Image 1 (cartoon, rainbow, N blue to C red):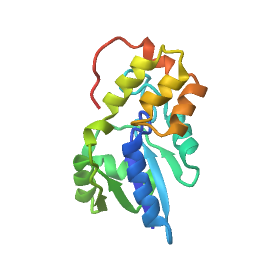
Image 2: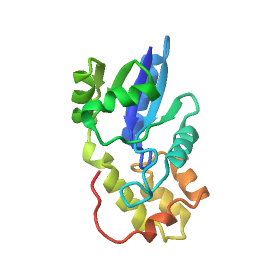
Image 3: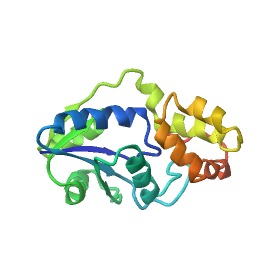
Length: 178
C-alpha cells in the first residue's frame, strides 16, 4: 500500500515531518511512503522560494527512505486528484489539511487526517518569514538555534550548505500566505 503525503514543502518543516513519520509507521510492514511535492514548476517568488528539484533534495536530505515525486500545478481543483494520481499513484492520503482531505475524499480516496498540535507554528509563511529575517545573518549557530523550532536540523544544514537562505533576502518585504 502506498501512503501519500502531499505538500509544497517550502521548506520541509516539522509539521511535514509529523505527517511523513506517521505515514512511515503505517507503511513499516507493507507499503511505501510517497512524498508528493506540488507546485513543482512554479517560478521562484516569495511564496515559492525554492524550485521543485531543491525541495526534492531537501526531503531526500532528511529521509532517503521515501519516494519523492514532483507534481506541476494545473490550477483546476476539481481535476487535481486525477492529475496528481498520475504522479503519486493510488494509495492512502495522509494529511492535516482539511481542504486537501475533502478534495481527495470526493475522488473516493481513503484519507487519514492527522491532528497537528500547535498547527500555527507549522504554517509555511511563518517559517519562510522567520528564515527571511535570518537570511543575511552570518552566524550559522544563531540560524540553527532559531530555525530548529520549526525545521529539522538536516534541512537547516541543507539550506546553509546550499546558500538557500540568502535567496529569501532578495524578496520585497511583506507577509505571503500559504
